[in-house]
Each structure stands twice: as structure tokens, then as C-alpha cells.
Image: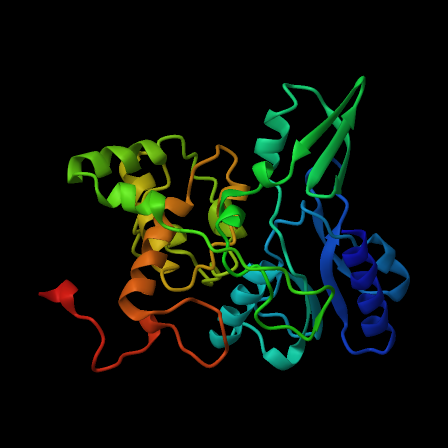
Length: 315
């Protein structure tokens, strides 16, 4: 991880010094363990605050839409796919960007990691050799890194950046995993069972919109939940309003979601938001053979039409 950090700092200093970019978007150490925070660096003498480790799970593509300056951005695989979507949807121009690609072996789920501490406060966290060494007052603990990964990272099949201007390390091996076992279990349920499942899934939602705000492809000027003329959905935590928000947001990102996990990471009550988006990801892949953000030439199937598109849904 330190090698990545060093190369990110070197690239940032070079790009800012020679005026290739106006700002570098990356991460710096957070004020508490397991939570690094996004940072915008505009001066070469500030690049030493940049860092990289398994606590850089925020999708920095969320900070790109509608920028007018020249930007360097530190991006892992899912981030670069989100950037590709933003470029195709005219949220930012490719020529504005310098993408510092980071091969990724997954981000740490702070909830899983801290659960292993049994209430003890972590003061220092160090990653080394697929282990996480956590220390605090009167304790030292070593965790298995793989067991503490975000769920989306544990089944990620595109860990390397798909578009970039330079890489900070050698590409990592891609995983050969089954992504949709959980979706198939829900599909096998009866209609009544599925209703009860999703009802329970969102029952704790407090309508804070953290999932929407953290999503790199939720950038409508006015979200449908904020419309007042007409008002599409109520502002309360009434179950009908809550279901409507989650269902409509899922359909809005269909064919655009890269499964970066930003929504679940941001949710303060731990809702498995990806259960909605993964179903639609699976359908788009099976119906159209499409994976979002893999290149800048292929338009998403839901914003194009071909005569041979599947139409079984209207029969």
C-alpha cells in the first residue's frame, strides 16, 4: 500500500508542478481509523497528505460531474467505470481528466472490521501481507483482510482500472466468482415472499438519501423525491414512500451502476441497497450482454435501441 501511496504522490506532484491539471482528487488519512476522506489538492507542496490503503472505498467519481477545470483523479476499477459513464453522459469531458489508475484488491468494510474488536477502540490500523493489524489501548489484534472486505469487493470481477492515463502498480489478478447467487435466491421466492423480503430490507430506512448522495451516477439537477410540481413521492418514512424511493432509484441507475458499493457504505442503518441494483445489473447482462463502463464506445442498452433488442417484457 505504501508503494501505491508513493507513486500517487509522485504523479500528483508532477501533474500540479507542470500545470497539466488544476487539482488532484484523492484520499488523505481520516480523523478515525478505517475512514479515509476525500481531499482536493491544488498545490504541489500539499501532495504529501495523499494516501492509499483499504480504507479508500468512497467513489471519487462522485466529485466530477459539471467540473470545468482540469482534474487528476485517483481511481480504482469501479471508479473508472463510473467515470466512463459520466463521460458518455456528458457530465465531464475525457480531455479534462488525467486518471491515476489503482489496481485494487478490495476495500475494507469498517462495520465488519470493528465488529471484531468487541467494542474496543482502534487507535492504529496497518495493512500488510493480506492482514490488518489493529492496535489500541491494551490490545493488538490481527484480522484476515479478505474476511473484512466490502461485499461488493469480495465478488468484484473488474478490479483493475478500465480507462486510465497511468497505473501506480501492476494489474492484479481478476477474480473468477459467481456474482448473482443472492439474486437467484430472491428470484426463486414466491411473489409474497419477495414482497416480505424487500419490505423487511428497507424497513429501517430513515430517508436520509445518503445512498443517493454518495452515488456517482445520481446527478439529476432535481431528484424526483425533491420535485413538488408534481410531487411524485412523500417526504415521510411511510412504508409506501420508502418503497417508492428505493424502487425508482434502482430503476434510475439500471444499466449504469458499477456496483462500487458507495450506497451501502454510506447507509447509516446498514441497508443492503445493492439487492435492488444487482438484480437489474444481472438482467441487463443476461438480456443485452452488457457490462457498464467497460469502454467509451459502447452505449448503454437502455439509452439506445436496436431492432433485435429483447422485447419479451411487452408480450
